[in-house]
Length: 254
Ligand SMILES: NC(=O)c1ccc[n+]([C@@H]2O[C@H](COP(=O)([O-])OP(=O)(O)OC[C@H]3O[C@@H](n4cnc5c(N)ncnc54)[C@H](OP(=O)(O)O)[C@@H]3O)[C@@H](O)[C@H]2O)c1
Image 1 (cartoon, rainbow, N blue to C red):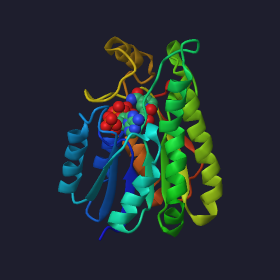
Image 2 (spheres, rainbow, N blue to C red; image 1 turned 120 degrees about the vertical axis):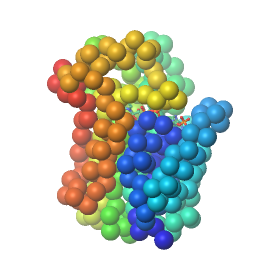
Image 3 (tube, helix red, strand yellow; image 1 turned 30 degrees about the vertical axis):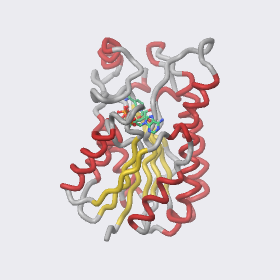
Image 4 (cartoon, protein in one colour; image 1 turned 120 degrees about the horizontal axis):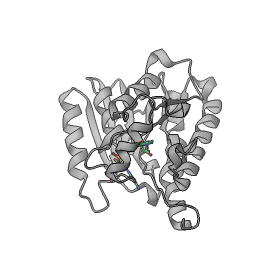
């Protein structure tokens, strides 16, 4: 029987996979979600992550779905159906879109909102009674530096708007849930290294420039972001809620 159940969206690569690896232990139930690629080509990647965290003692359940099509609440149903409880959520699935205003169509704009903010509200609506019932209720949303600034002129208008909405929703839900002992926080990564299988909005040479413009001189590793998320999920962080933590090597100082 799992003594704690954690749901992670977008766990097939990068930050979501790093969170799964960081948290894996005996007694943890993990609901791992991904889209599985646009045509199912990344399903094996999520299954491999599941095998890895099971080897570390966690129990897993996998759900594939495209969050652009709605229905994130079914991830909560899958977690509670398998493990009988849901204590913690890491809303991480997302992508960056650099299309500038002038060329940014409503379909792409709406898709960014649906995957990032729409999926988050669907998760919270379905998870609310389970979070309230938990003695370690935690929500962490993965935002982005792009919601706060445009370093080196790098703009991602649709992503910035969707991540800004995500942070506002997280703060509001933090206020709603504080008296229940449930914390709700955001982690805003700076430029973070992509796996080969990840979805990059930047050409390769732009990643080298991104590392150079980061004050500590390097990209974040997915494990850097996972460590901050794990802190928010921990018992030690029980008194911290409604915050956004920038994990960016000082990028916000530019
Ligand atoms: N890397 C960075 O520089 C950076 C910076 C700031 C913020 N972030 C944020 O960090 C989060 C994780 O990014 P990452 O770099 O780890 O990216 P990644 O390696 O490309 O992983 C993204 C994950 O989200 C899933 N996903 C993407 N679109 C989806 C959709 N429509 N429906 C369901 N799942 C979907 C992907 O599923 P499949 O691949 O299985 O299809 C994958 O599991 C994102 O929210 C991103 O905005 C990243």
